[in-house]
Length: 172
Image (tube, rainbow, N blue to C red; front, side):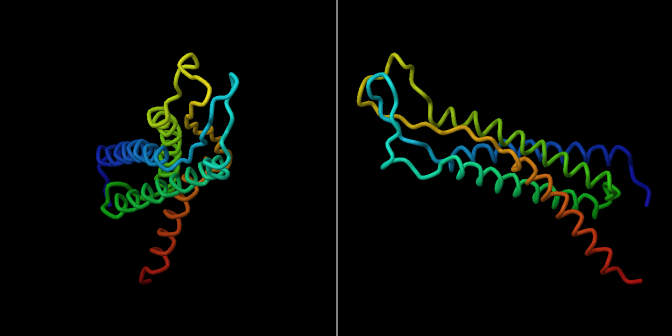
């Protein structure tokens, strides 16, 4: 099968654009589902109201980040498989690795835009504007750690498994 070089480059650029869009949209979803602590201003400081605040907001945000990046990785892998089946690319190891890189870009975009959208949804007022008894919501920061690998791992695993299943189903 003869591939058009421009077609393969276009497929790679399209996959990268998809990863960026998935990261931006995923960041918006992540900002919407991240739980926030409720704080009350008291004596020049801020006290977290345990009764109104969700339990373990940091872990919930970590878990949703991992799930959303995994979902983005699966979508990237599915689109990469479709491009390979249509003959746009060879579907080689390089394409598998590119799907993993694009999923990593999606995870980075998700993290960056998720933080940006959280700032829009839960803005912190100026300290001068606060007085005792005021309440505000605060979304705790998330340190993804191992969750950074969830999306790329899912993309590579799904792509590799689909190729393996397609290879074993071929008639010999």
